[in-house]
Length: 583
Image 1 (cartoon, rainbow, N blue to C red):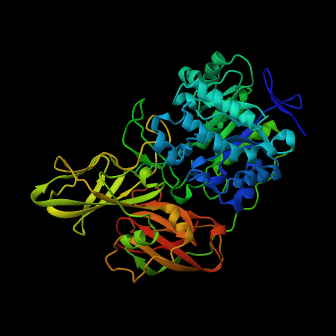
Image 2 (image 1 turned 180 degrees about the vertical axis):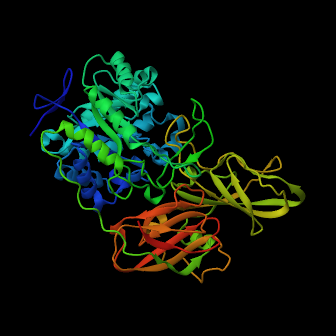
Image 3 (image 1 turned 135 degrees about the horizontal axis):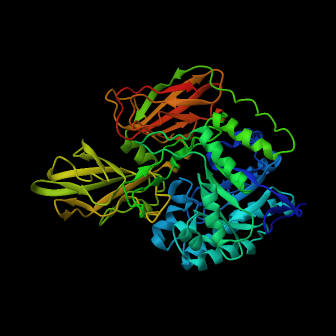
């Protein structure tokens, strides 16, 4: 058994100085059968440690209902087998460009701004979650023969709050549950962030993408002693739907990495391998000024991050530049990268054989329909990721007036008396063509991802401010939700018929025959926006807004011979071609 501690100037392993050369790889963004390959690539790049967040909402989608928490333990075992130490960052908030920053919607829907504070209800929820989670971490600590050398308290809390009692409670909770390895915090290298997010007695680390010396000088003003560490070295960045693909020059990133190491610091490369936001788990941001109150920008399905190891598990130019820097900190030659995974042999079109309208899908897989005085939020309906159909009657007779979805989050396709009338957004929540009464209106509202950073974190989804006809509220609203998790049980109950010729929204089902299965991607030319499943595995959201043009299908998802594909189109398609293609 070994002992890892925080010394006056260095991290110490059994009393000897050691430098952490870590890389972020989130187990929940990589298919489990591919963990070993990706971890081997981290070793080949010159890293000795892997870091992962833990998304609370993935593992406790409903209060008291836990889902595959042991996945974290299996990942930590894989890290040990790969010869890597591990840093665990359990939050409970993780940011990570992940839905709601990792907080369950049922928590933030109830508590709002009281989340991430000393609020007794929030702490009760966290206590219960950590009790489940830490049973996977505690027995895998370094002093018990496992790989875990460090656990982080919260995440960039100084960017959000200043509740020192809350941070003290988390620290005590981690210790009470059996965490004995060093506890650390991480924040931006700014005075107010370090003041708000640090915990007396714990090592503070900082997050940045460049100017390491300046960042560490700021840290030293708050923490004169202890090893220096950049917990997140941002070597790339993430993309938003409708935006440009973000890249960072490989040599520029390598120079910044070398500067960190020249300062004598340890580092965690964020991301070493980004992976994929499968199943609609991508978050969203509201950039715009210090308050982050701007228009919603939804994150794409890919979390490639322009990382040294790309979304498909391939070394990039950045990988080799980083390896050239990191090899200098190893006494022995670095291992060679593992062989590249197999890829699909050839492109094949999916044969679309069935279709069901959205209403039919909702009837088969959705929750119960109830009548509400005002439109309920997604949170009130228990919807995490997916959509809600709101229906209301416009009384009549009355003349044409504007119809407005006040406080819309995030996007609605509107029908009036069964005919499509337009698409509403947060920025344009009013139909362009007025509605006369009597009329029946339907609004299919989709969440594009909950905000994962800033003061708007935890905001509710749906029609949050009421449905207005002119200035009059429409009451007696019927609402029914369709959660993406409902598809996990299959679609046998969905009433499929023949595919329509007009490319109407709905659930399309088809098959594709594969010879030479391997990593692949789904291409959807002519489709607008929705989700794709391959053999029941949700590979994520597609959207013609770009910049992402296809969805990654990991090799373990495909099988030789016939494969089933579902496409949930939420707007319309003018072509209907779905293609399984090589990378």
